[in-house]
Image (cartoon, rainbow, N blue to C red):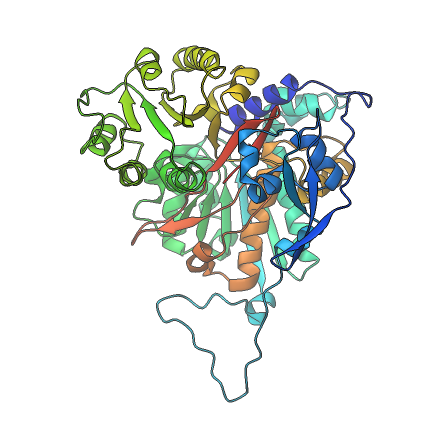
Length: 497
């Protein structure tokens, strides 16, 4: 999955035209400043040929933030349109005001929730952390020493996951400067299950406070039993299998399941697309005769697509009750009949078949010249490469990604610079994941100690490549449920949720 995600992102970057200095549209900062709700904003008047990217670069404000502050931008920039841009980004995220507490007043802790305030006692502890990943060190002796790092990572198994370690190491070094005390144990763990059994018998393994493991399923299953017996939290960054957290409260699954897409998609659609004409395109076994009410459509969808939870469709149904603006069709040709000239047409295409998806996008692109369309690809279009970028932009295509890196973000820029300086090469997605996982879990240990798992659902940290939001059902492990909703806009991928 990670390799495919990297491939998708690289293909997209290669499709972006390279601009020379002469090609970049000049944008002058506005001199008009207004105070709105106590915050100062530039009032920028859009001029001919200006793009969201050029405006974002001039004012040094991420495009996602501009869209959030000016929702009308989603329909595209228009000449003479006025948009508000914060004079200082920091004004949008003010620090919380801490009210003083009198000496006589006791601090009340909700008994239903664990006390997840950082504890100075935990910061004084030294933590043992194990990292297991397939380094394939047996092959190192045959690797030429004069090859560039990019070629090593691509052609030799011993370097396939090394960037994950490098990112994790950078996170550890960063947090050690903030007071973390930790010992990192790195183990070479390939697909040989006997090696995992041997590792679990090492004396130091029982004293681990955290284990992070990039392992194949059979090896991970052995390790998860060990983690449960020893009460050690075990992080799996790779697996999408929902069964790895079953009956094991110590396993933490980072890859979100497709079933969790509906939470983010329903919230986004209901907020960003009022009064829209919704058309769901799929292969529905049971034809829906009454297009105006569709009383049981969520059951039909769920019976055909188990990965789609009924919550999304129930919300859409409530929104469009009695309104013939919600349609379920089996093909592109049926969809065309329901396109509306007066409304935004939100088209949800449910398919993972690459040939079918590409054909549908190409045809919908033709309709985008006549109708206002917004395309949502479900459930795993992030795995489909070679999609026509121009058509994705024309149809305002939205795709859900487990990971999304905003290369205009200052934190991302700093990380790339530090990584280049240290390792003399470019960080890939694994490097970002290693860094973010290290930041999240090492800081959790530092704040909450070894039993940090109960506090993970409250952390919701915005990291470099994604946001982790954890949920847990009784007796099971913790699962990340967060998906990034990404829109094709100005030939870039813009996060919108």
